[in-house]
Image (tube, rainbow, N blue to C red; front, side, top):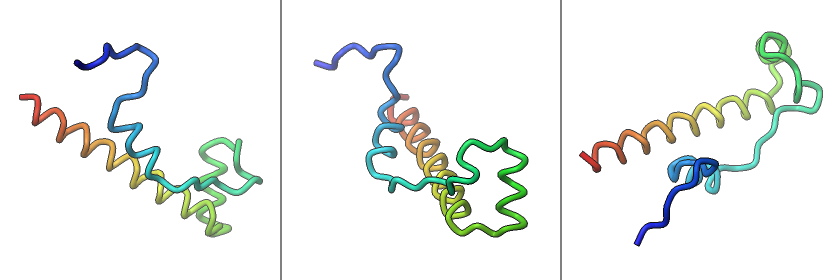
Length: 76
């Protein structure tokens, strides 16, 4: 029997991706910067750590969307 899903729980596909993903972080200088300064930092400074974090975050988002679509198609 499946347990009842609580409102505060993350969807299953999000938990799967988070558990499997590496723990990348942007550089300390731009950890709490606004989006525009962060984008400018990646474009002009070409910070490898921030670019790697951004690419990994994008891959995780696409994986979550794919798993959600796959789950939705299986339920229909």
